[in-house]
Image 1: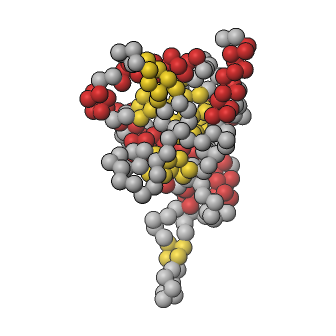
Image 2 (image 1 turned 90 degrees about the vertical axis):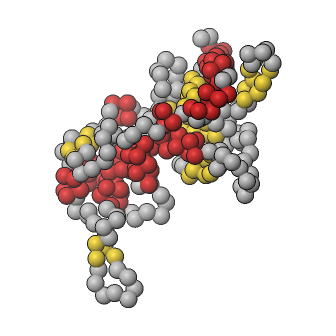
Image 3 (image 1 turned 30 degrees about the vertical axis):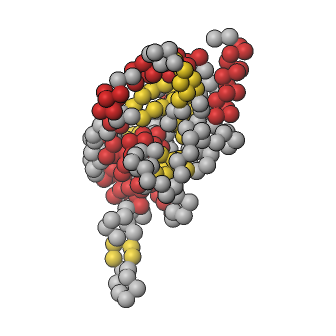
Length: 268
């Protein structure tokens, strides 16, 4: 790729991920939509929240939000043109675009598999989108439930996401996280939870005198999940989370600082 093309593409994606770029599709709240749109809060969006047009797109956001290799996301980011099988010109707005730690950019559409089979033209459009975004230095993926709903992966990611960092969380969760990073790894979740000093939360009802352990909450487990989502530790996602799940030191890719310089070779 020539230098002027590199520069052009870099500027293009920088603008796409900037605050100035508004979503090219508006899904107004309160409407009666058969696709069940929603909202997904995420710190990886410049607006702090992503509009999802259907539950499967929300599931894609779970994957994106919990993967520390993804550093930025934007919904309905661009409008691109392509030719249909009959030669007609059509415009398309992809669902999501993701910037990764190595600088690569992945454009994503989400569509249930049975819808793809019913429509019949999605394979052609996918090839067209791959060509369009390859010229812009990006990659294109059409995802469906065969990838997004693999188990136990999606169940683990949903559990991780429920423990994501929030602005009003207790400050001592970060203290627990710092303590976990001093422990010898690899280790098991149960071993780590028993090793840290603050591994339980106490509470009581207003009319009660005795403090009791809140069994539904474990701050050590929350700290482990947050460390994994930040790429500061590795965690085994191949089996359902349990006290026997292994956690390790982070992979080398997460030790290297992230970059926004466009990357072309690495497959997402």
